Length: 96
Image (cartoon, rainbow, N blue to C red; front, side, top):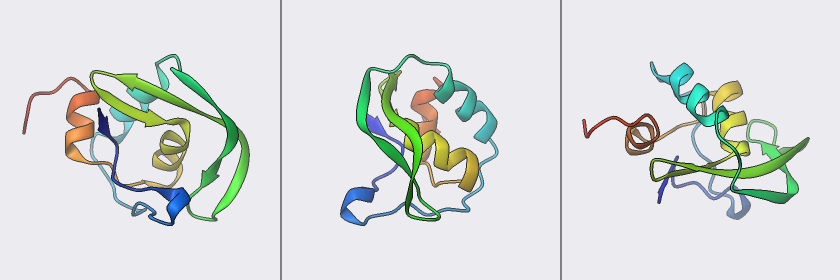
C-alpha cells in the first residue's frame, strides 16, 4: 500500500503544510470520489490547529494508494504534503 506521506499525527509526526501541488484539484477529485473501506471511531484532526473537528474519519483505497478523510481534509484546507509516489498511484500515472 502507498500512503500519502510518512506522517503519524498520533505520534507527533506531522506532515508539512503549505506544500502546493499543481495536481491538487485532481487529487481531491480522486480522493473524494471513493467509498470508504473503513470508518474510524473518532474524529479527524485539523493539522494546522491540532484540534479535532466534528467530522468522522474514514479510510479509503484506490490503485494501491491508501488515505484517510483526515488527509483529504488537510490537503484541501492546508496544502498538506503528499508524496509523488502516492499522487502517481492514485491518479493512475506511470512513474515520473
